[in-house]
Length: 213
Image 1 (cartoon, helix red, strand yellow):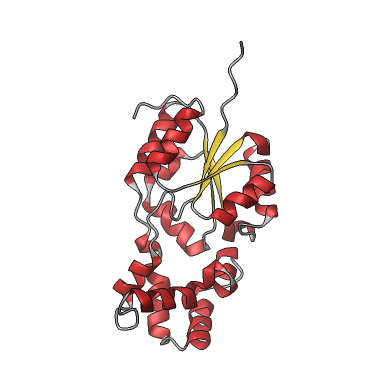
Image 2: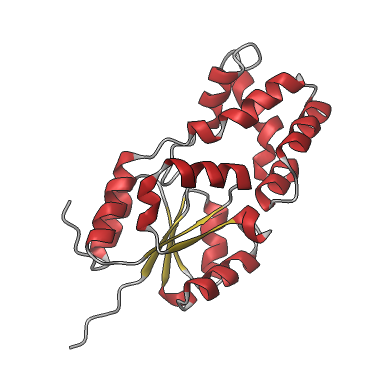
C-alpha cells in the first residue's frame, strides 16, 4: 500500500518562529505610557491597530517607517519620539523561539522542504535575514512587504503556492492568527492554529513526519 504523501510545511514568523509579545514590548520601551497591563493593551490597540490601518500599510510595503511614526503620533497623540522608539524596537524583540527552531532543524535534517509566509515590513525582514542564520533552512519564503500583499488576503496565498511550486492542498501552514489560518484553508491549503512548538511537533508526528525529538 502506498504511503500518503506528506504535506510541505510553511511557517508564519512573528508568534510562531519568533517571539512576539507586543504588550510586554510596550511596557519595556515606553513605560511612561504603558504603565500597567491595561494601558499597555490600550497602546497596543492604538499603535498596531490589530495589524490593520497604518500598520497594515507598513506590512504591505506601501508606508515607510518615518511616515508610519508620524501617522501614529498624529492619530494617537503619542509623542513622536515614543512612536519612533516602538517602531525601532519591534525587530529587536523578534527573538527566535527555541522550540520552533528545534522543530525547523529536525524537519530540515529529515529532508523536508520548508517555506515561510510572513506579514513583515521590509526593514524588519532585512533585519531578520541579516541576524538569523537558521533562516537558511528555508527553501524559500514570502515577506509581505516585498510582494505588496498581506495575509489574510487570498492573493498572497495563491502567490505563495505558485512561487513554492506546490499545490495548495499539499501545503500545511502554521500561523498563530486564527483569521490567517481560516484564509489559508479557504485558499485550499491545509492549516493549523499555532499555539506552541510542542503542539505543532505532535501534529506533524501524527501526520506521519518522523522527527527525532
